[in-house]
Figure 1 (cartoon, rainbow, N blue to C red):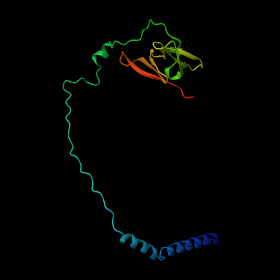
Figure 2: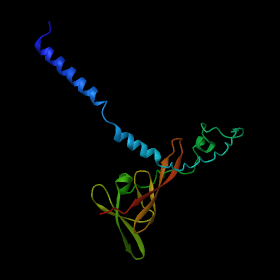
Figure 3: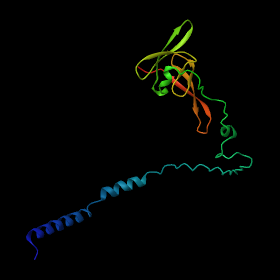
Figure 4: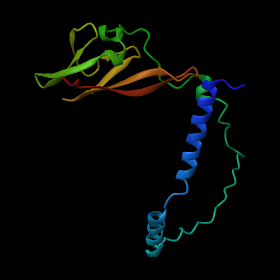
Length: 173
């Protein structure tokens, strides 16, 4: 025997299904009219596809070339020529990483340009061409109103060293 609550639920579900299915057979004349209007419009021009260029093959011939996975003779010997000077006295700004130093201005005294660099401890230091900054033996090459050009000596991972250019730019206030 079906309980009265279940009977009411089943009756409600059946009524909703009947109403839902009866809505599908409604008047669709406005939809048919819109579709007919769209079909009457002239079609637009379709641009043709671009002509494909023929593929040119390339034959790789490694005969006589050095393997890219073997170290070069200069790297293998470690005799790149560039080395940090281990006997040079270290300057104060070499204790800071280059990315923590900020250029805050310039100064001209007796036709000589100086850069003003602020370290992460908040102190401002005066530097000139030839001074060293950063932890990778960075030597100052030039000073302009907006930047200080530095060249660092960094290991190349193969036992030798390479020069890497770097900039310390004027900090925006």
